[in-house]
Length: 353
Image 1: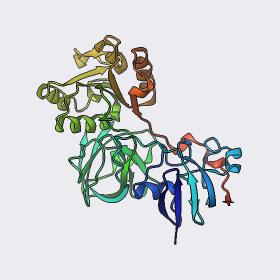
Image 2 (image 1 turned 90 degrees about the vertical axis):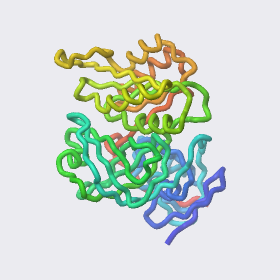
Image 3 (image 1 turned 180 degrees about the vertical axis):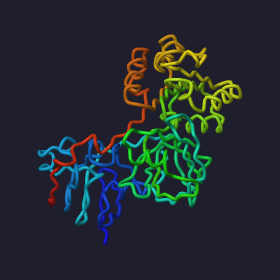
Image 4 (image 1 turned 180 degrees about the horizontal axis):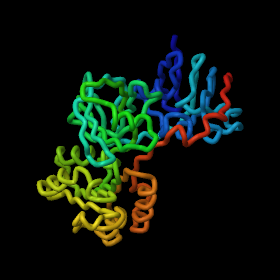
């Protein structure tokens, strides 16, 4: 059985199946609702129920306070419906967002590449092509692992039938341990996508700065490959940060691209270079490499950041000190279920008339 959900102020109407969240239904029907974590911890997808019966679900009390629940607010990523419903959402769709509907895919492992001592390149052949924007991500489901895990796409959209994921081994992480230690070529998995609002804003003027750390290189790699293949004429500069030479993966690819394209510059940076690395490039953190390269002045650029939260925070500070503003900076952040307190949630069924 399904119900209709009307989304104001756009007037979009979506069908929501039993057990399906409002957010899942919207994304799969090509209707954009703002979201980030996808499991009730960040409050990005908060909406107002105007009428109808809604089950709140496992929303964190930090993301959805008791007073907000009493006012009829829910998190679209957790809420399911028990009747036809009307909601009101703060929808501000970026004009550069393509809005490809989310879909489910069956994937077969076609290659596993050792990118660094801690990062694997997982290549998955899809049962059919997936349309996406460079910079977006997928949710991967693995046999025997509860739930799904989000991984950014490293391949450009032109290679739509086989996706490339860069996966760092997380200590104690069930999914990343499985990928690093057990998964084999020929194994199958399920994934859904595309998700996310991390993509190049083609309509916005300005040369492009990419700052990446660790496996956060995946999204910038997809974006840069796509930009260069499309013949984009803007100046593109990639700053890649790593601890040492062993962790500086795919640098040969970007050195080759820099030699081929006059509008692409590649600046790698190592913050813990060993003596036997014989490293002659920049020594220090990646945001410091960007500051040194541009002499601390970033005005006129658009910046795209992807990597660990401390790297992103440091890069934002450096960029803003160099005269970039919030509207000029885009980043990819992932939230996990551990970011919220799922054990103290309060679920409720209520009716708005």
